[in-house]
Image (tube, rainbow, N blue to C red; front, side, top):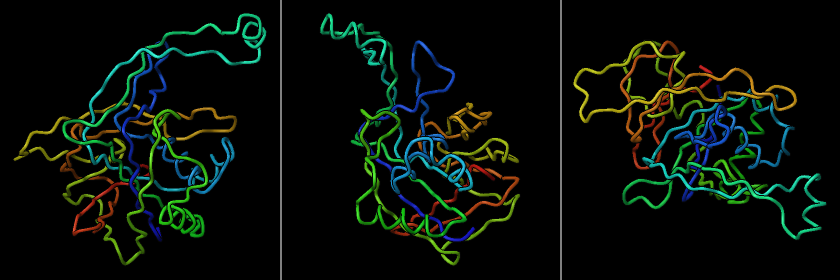
Length: 255
């Protein structure tokens, strides 16, 4: 792995739809890997369905920086497909469907959600272009947190070279700040945990195949209140020094 782009994705609310929900739309507490791919694609200007194979070669990690709370609202969805246009022209309206939607909002005094994203790719030019666009605040497409109604902003943090981070060997006891692919976990270190941690484990999308077909999801683990987690991993982790001497120890979702 060479250069790693680090940036924050922020916004007042989010909805990262759980793939297995239907009549009621529930949200993940973090952007899954497929969302991260879409965010990078929007930054550099790849159209929908054109980037799955390319960005699947990338490496992604995400850290939840602001704790979230859940709020369910009933949303009135209006069908705008071709078969509804006749009725829309005749009646001046289309039938709506009321659907409960769970939104993720910042908890406490926080005004915005914040997710720190780490992105690397074998194509160094792609990473550098994304970094330049974020640094200059000129993403190709607007960014959002899951839904187009959840407008987001991308904030450049750093472009780390190989000398700017440490690679921690597998089996090292470390304090992890990122969402973890459960398949990479060797051991959770709970002794002396203060304050207590609330861990969430759930299945999340990982990548798309041709035709936007969802490939098998993976199990992920994260701390529900945006706290770090003491673990040993079966793969190496990366430790970054970010901003005002803040340490971020992350495990890329691909291992």
